[in-house]
Each structure stands twice: as structure tokens, then as C-alpha cells.
Image 1 (tube, rainbow, N blue to C red):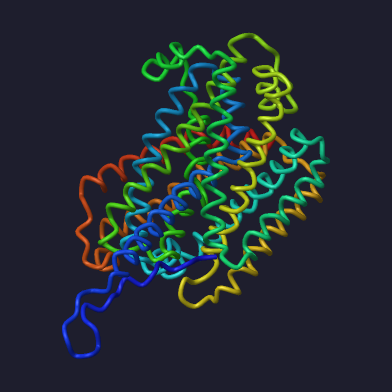
Image 2: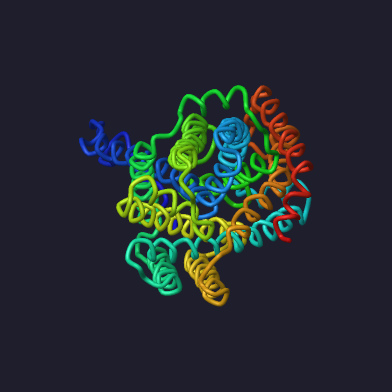
Length: 429
């Protein structure tokens, strides 16, 4: 699943005993190494972003846009700021230490990393059932194919990605291409729906209504559970770690959040235009109904493509990241990781089929809210490493301002979680 970066070591002189210039091939090798690093960084950014942009993401955005209207813009803006503050810290701490999140947890307190892995695996499985459901619903909207059949075929396709000879490269390229496709197609629908952009902008600053459940849910749906760790673990597996890569890690962490922010904003505007126009939405599939209202049959097909792309990339991201929490970066063989990833996808697909080929809207919203409630736990462990365990950061002097930003955002997630407990429980009933 991973591909190590090319070896950067190049001899300065020939072995003949006489001084000779560096071979002409060295610049080309350096260029290939730089290109490989850029490709991996891009893949990590989109792996995180597309892991967030799944069926739950689309369902949550649609649900709260219908409930809150233009006021949902405030929740989106606040969530982006909190997401950036937290992911900046998570990626930098993991990247500089060169250790996965659960490995750091076990070093802070024996067994803590195990608890993190168990909670993440449970939340990841719930999310992944919804992801497979999304692939089935996407193929249904595109081709009229049965969701069960579409979901099963999509699960098989995801397994094929990880069985390919260069799975890491394949994963990086697939998430980038499909991520860009989702943004482009959703932009088209957002323009077609004619949303009240001015009203949305006004609500960013002066919201007509504030929903703690909405904010907690979309923060949980963007960086909750496995999502915040997806890209960071990808960088570790690719060898992009250490103090020398702080700049690249920082930039990638911010851009990954901005990609999800752009997609959520476009989706919000696309649905807001339909809701503001007074068009009725089908309660069984409000997002599909909104796309159809905005652009007719073309809109429905576009929705199918967007939902399928969002779902299949989330299946890939969720499975990869959950298994990275259940294995060791040094003691687990590549073959074992591949088998576990494929098994996780197969389990998610089978459970989806057994559930009747659909994931209820409340389940997808609950998954995001549940991950939002769990988010403070994992974030606190990593912020503690940045604050008190400099020995795990290879001598790196962690910026105090960044810790202040991180802990402040963490306190906000605690406040949001406390205020969202009752609404989250109500979702189950």
C-alpha cells in the first residue's frame, strides 16, 4: 500500500580514486525524487479530503442546509477554522515524530494507543458501511443499477486497488482525480441552482441561528474518527517525516482542510439555491432531489457521479487508515496490511448488503456526530505529546503559539460535544 521515496544518496566522486564531477544523471534523480515527494503530498492531501467527503458528508450537509438555511454558513466557517487549528497540530506532531497516532498514544501511557485504535475502528466501520452504501446509491443514480449490486461491485473495485502491484501510487492518483471531479461537477450544480450568496455571506458573520449539533457533526465528519489521521499516516508510510519536512507537512495539512471546505461550501450553495427557491425535496434522498431540481436529469446523473466518487474514495481512505491503526509501521508486513485492508472492505460490503442495501440518513448523521464526540480524546493525546513529550519529537522545539491554538480549538470541541450529547442520543431514537 505504500511506496518509499527514492533514495536521495548520490556519491560525490567516482570509486576510481580520481575526483570526477557528479554524474549528469544526479539532477534528473533529484528531480524525480522531488516530483515523487510532491505527488505523495498531493495524494495525502486528497486522501484526507476525500476520506471526509463521503456519503455522510453529503447527507450531513444536505440535512443541515434544509434545517438551517443560510444560517448553516456560520457552522461551515467555524468548522473550517477549528479543523485547521486541530489538523495543523495533528499532522505536525505525527510527521515530526515519525510515529503513527496510536504508537504515540502507547508511549504516552501503555494501552492508550490500543484504546484509540479500538474506538477509531468502531467508528470507521460504521462510516464505511455508509461509504459502501453511497457507492450503491451513486451507481443507482447513474445507471439505475440496484444499490446492492452497485455497492458490491464498488467494494470489489476498492479491493482491486489495494491488490494492484503499486497500490500506493494507484491510491494517490485515484483520490486526486476523483476529488477534482467532485469539485468540478458540484460547482456546475451550485451555479445552476442560483443560491442567495449574499445572504449566506451575511450569516457567516451574523448567523440567524446557531446549531451546536450541526457544528459538532460537520467537524466530526471532516476530521473526526479516522479522517484527521488519514493523510498524516500516508506521509509516514511514504517516508516523508522529520523536522526537515515540517514546511511540506504544514502546507499539506492546511490545504487538505481547505479542499474539504471548498467542497462543503459548493454543496451547501447548490442545495441552498434549491431550498431558497421553495422547491420540495424528496425526504428519502434530499441531496439527489436537490441536484435534480437544480439541473434536471443531468443534475441527477451528476449527483450519481459525485456520490459514487465521494463514496469510493472514502471506502479507500477509511479502510487504509483503520488498518494503519491496527498494525505496526515496522513489524507488520506489506502483505499482511494488504490482506487486512481488503478484509475490512469486504466486511463493510457484506454488512451493507445484509442491512438491506441502504444506510439510513440518521445513521450517517449519527456517525459524524459520534466521531465529533470522540474527537477530543485522540486530539488531546497528540497535543499532550507536543506540550510535554519533546523527547518523542526528535529534539524539535514545538511552536508554543501552535499549541495555544490547538488547545483552544480542543476546548471548543469539548464545549460542542457536551452541548451535543442529547441531540446525538436523540438521533438514535
